[in-house]
Amino acid sequence: QGRQPLLSSPLLLRHFLFSPPPVLPSPFEPSFPPSKPGAPILPRSLTAPLLCPVPELRFGISSDAPPRRRPEDLSLQPLQLGFEFATWPPEMPSGFQQISGEEEELGGAGSKITSTLILSVFTAVLGSLQFGYNIGVINAPQKIIEQSYNATWMERQGKEEPTPIDPGTLTTLWSLSVAIFSIGGMISSFMVGIVSEWLGRKRAMIVNNGLAFIGGALMGLAQVGKSYEMMILGRFLIGVFSGFASGLVPMYVGEISPTNLRGALGTLHQLAIVTGILIAQVFGLESLLGSELLWPLLMGLTVVPSTLQLLLFPFCPESPRYLYIIRNKESKAKESLKRLTGCSDVTAALNEMKEEKRRMDLERKVSILELFRSRMYRQPLLIAVVLQLSQQLSGINAIFYYSTDIFSKAGVESPVYATIGAGVINTAFTVISLFLVERAGRRTLHMLGLAGMCFCSLLMTTALALQEQVPSIRYLSMVAIFGFVAFFEIGPGPIPWFIVAELFSQGPRPAAMAVAGFANWTCNFIIGMSFQLIADRCGPYVFLIFAALLLVFLGFTFLKVPETRGRTFDQIAATFRRTPSLLDHEIKPYTELDELSPENHE
Image 1 (cartoon, rainbow, N blue to C red):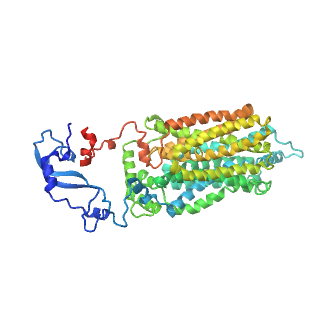
Image 2: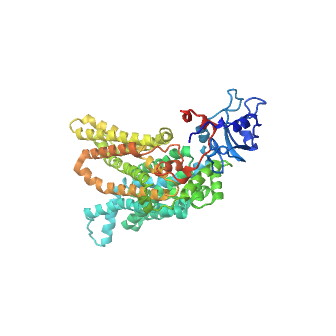
Image 3: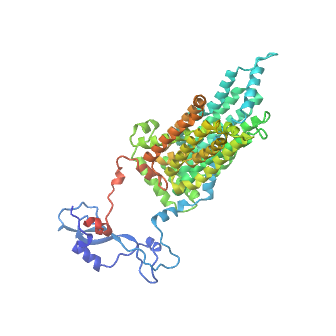
């Protein structure tokens, strides 16, 4: 439209030069200390109402009246003039330090760690600890539990010389005891969205502990009750509990965490899982609880974290995002924010939630079916599912399956302790990921982990294929195992769990968490049922299959997965919008700097 510099209007220039400066509103005075004693306060930006006759042209001026095409038409009305003053002079008084916008954001009220935030995150991840414990607890006492199944089978015959259980039947019962855990997780993970919306994040986790108590009691009393049905049913209920925990814990932790700590705190979910696996491996030693007498106690020990969680949750606040965006309870959301941040002024965090709620109100409530139908959610949903698959199809289960055998062939006298050593590395590198995720970013760490695992898979294949011809190469396979586990916990282990919560805004987040969790559990079940057959047919070359899959996942992450570090939920969701929303079309007033910039005069 042939724009010209703002000050080219004679009347406006005259008013700007000879009129007294506008008086600063009192709320702005403390924010702009004088550069010198007695010097006037010069803010970095000011928008002040002025009353003057000027042409109603939109040259840096925003008016409620529509612009007229004739500049000679003058009117007297309040106008909003944008002024940009110079930044602070070099001579800063002691006690003041100029900081950038990014530093202001990171140093805001919501970015510090408070005791309430620590307590809330710790209490929530106790559910993840149980999840990991029940993954690892079933492996160590396998032979002893199978003997118990056989004894129960023979006792039920009521004969003087009962026949032992058929090996095929025993294998079926044991496989069912292991696999039904994943079936329970598949069912409950698909219901995470419904339950979290109905009960809320915190209350849903409290109710979920009821399943852990029932499941733990059934498993712990299976020996006394002489019933392998109790054991199988207990494993199923524990799987249902773990499926809910795998969705509710990352959702709750992600929603209560400050933006600049969301990745680090989200990694605690995976850290709790691997810690639970390690605890189960240690307690499963025959010298501790893995004996014929104490294995029921080993299985029933899962109720201890549930008891602690029930005792601590009354002191934890509900998710403020759930309270405000879903339940529209602003006062309770403010109270929750104040407890989590430790600050009385939570306006900035509340405004962010208001903006997210305003955008969400423009859209219909998203169900699982609508999540698949909408083009807006297609790309983030694809990313969420593929990242979950990259975790389960990475080959980590194969590594733990082969670890004891590999360590035995390498000459380790007690391979079970070497397997526990792999669990220690598993936990240690999850801690390292905790500190790296906010520095290097999610996308970078995930790609690094996939690339490292691919290299270790090739190394593993070479070592296993040549260990008969070159005996000394067996130690290379041990290095490959430890490296594979380390790279897994740097990226593919923790990141897929919490990045799903980051990719979606508040509306579609529960449905997306349900779909992603279902994909993870389904893939876990398929791998658990089919890996044995594949490994028997392919032998050591099974890791070539995982290497190829890891390359595919690496390419997908490089091409499709965005970086979410340091960005709000709404900013991340906005990157996937194919068309801008109405809120993105708001007209923003120009300032002199906009008009006088070189780009407007080229």
